[in-house]
Image (tube, rainbow, N blue to C red):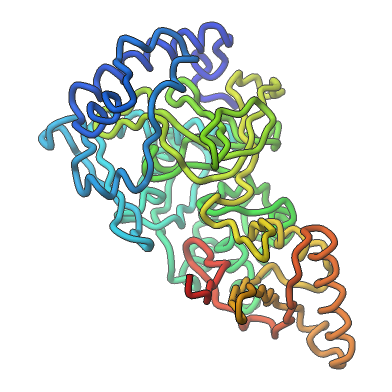
Length: 433
């Protein structure tokens, strides 16, 4: 189902003409209203009138998360605070939070894009959406909430946490869709089983899952345990919140980027060079329609690639592959680049392992070490010690064969690794570097 056929199926030529018109407008606006951009453009020797084609975008400087922190809290806003009707902020776990603002028109646009996402998932006004993304400063909860209402669906504003109550609501209210992180979907399934519930018997049929990288194997696990179709949604607070791109129920192969509102590029994270379609690199977004908090060439640190092939759903937007990791989450173990999601893919291929794991990076002398702790099923854990040791060696060999990195594998008892109601913390880095 397509929510806004006029824009979502625009011919490429018309779409690019719209993008260029909006790009010229936003570049003019930020140059005259945001001190940071005026200085950045001047330092780069570029003026708004130099943007004559979409290809000229690469003449503009990048914006980074550090730039947002340096202008904390409201230095990047391009409208007076009297026009700002909502403020969100990231968690700030790695420093000051990044603060984003929205005008009334921004909120309307966000609701429209989230409604598009839900429609792409096959949802309609007849659905009941259980929203387990966190409400508050985090953009997930309210972003999904307004989108569900714009679609005309019934929304249950559950927020995160309180897992046993969530399961009671899932059972009693009979929602047909759920929004949460992939790791929390698995946790819900696990707690439901512990409570003696058949989680596959719920009325749920669709999961709109995001906010963390997850593998195809994890998708299969979620779909099997909850008997749903699990679809990938992408967004980030700085660019909008959820609703930047969405996988459709027809294709299930890449997420449609809403290009009438965003220009997406993929760059080499080391050199900043723009990469062609199909090559993997760091996603960079330019917002075309945001009023309060526009961003020019924002470096997301998310690793993906772009796919221009037409999707059978009829949308003409370019698709981005699922995010495989983050350039700042990348582990370098003895010269080898490894993403947590790559290790997850190896683990999910091994029968008897649970989809709960943690990577512990440490340093012994001058050398980095990687320990992979992963839960096994009850049945496997009750096996004799030798069998478990053989399994650990086998998994370590698979990781070495596939990824070229040496890891110590430790199988742990079921339900011993920490569970997360929001984004899962997969890596514990004990190195003092």
